[in-house]
Image (cartoon, rainbow over the protein chains, first blue to last red):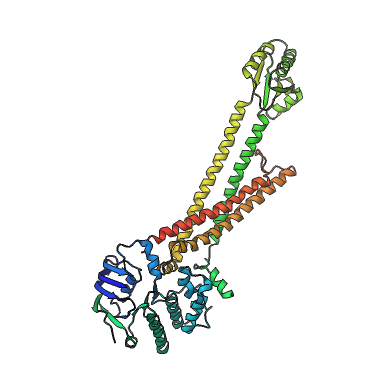
Length: 223
Length: 301
């Protein structure tokens, strides 16, 4: 599903943020990415969701070597990835419904066909009564749930989430985690960057730990 | 159902605030483009009128003789010129212009009164050519020389050529102005698109990140600028239509709004050409916005 080989990453002439990072994420795996602030977690996620090219090393995604792949393939690869951004990145002029519907619109799904999916997922994250609300009128936690709903609505092959439960209470955090596990059970590979040790202890998952740009704990399956 | 329709219509770009200056600039450029197009149409029509008026006409000018009594010789040579013309193959009719009419022709330059009456004005013979026939001018000149040695044939070719050049100059100048306006519209649309891209960079980046094709993102921008340019150009073109309708109305009641210019009134058929202005404005803005977005997306990984 995902293979990193000796990947390094620096922004411009600055220091290397990631150094010689190598790992494999098997299809259908559930992985937590941990590490202290500034360890390079967000940068690693950016490489994964094709926001930045690596400075060096090889990344293979869904069997495609990104170094040699045509740029024309990238939109299709990106549509197979659901991303929960740390800063949510919701479009403020669109309602919660329209924000969540966006990945389906981009995939060319007819609105008649995705209406029910969007309503169901918004209800699941507890926003069934706020579908027409603009993000600016929602609380931080509600915005985060819209962002999660948007990331999972198209049932992506790979789900990447950056601190997805940072703004919600523990009950909602557990509920959202169940959503991720359910998605994983249906075949989605999940990678979640988090500081929340309580979250990591939940369920069958593996952990990758980044410290100072280096991977110090490789993915290992936890019972 | 209402929810569904609302989502279907919703653009991924927010409605831009403060875009009125762009609308005004495009409307003014469309107005200028409409004026240029009308100048082309008027120049074409005037050139056609001139050609129609002079083509198929011949004029024989009989000059006063250098020696001897003027009037009897002028009258004799003029009558002879009319007879020669009437018997020339290809000439439909020929008639002498009265002295009063000749004086009216020179009135704009020489004025009128006793002074003009004393001047030895030439006599003019106006002849019409049978449509589609050619007159052997060399033979006509030879025959005229025998009976009216002071007569000269003028087939207006020289004037027609000069008028055609003038009309062509006006038309090409107007086309040049149209071209400059098209370039200015393109530059304006490109500038506006870049400003829009900069203002909505986060949205473009997010859509790109979510796997939107360049055409999806570009269509959000190009539709916006197509609508803006079309409606602003429509306003500019309509203002020009109103201007020419008013000018035509003033001419109809005998008032000439612009001295020394050909009639400004344009028929509905000619005014219909102005419909091209909003179409062209919209198309230029659409294409420019689309190309600008694709160029910007090439710089994103």
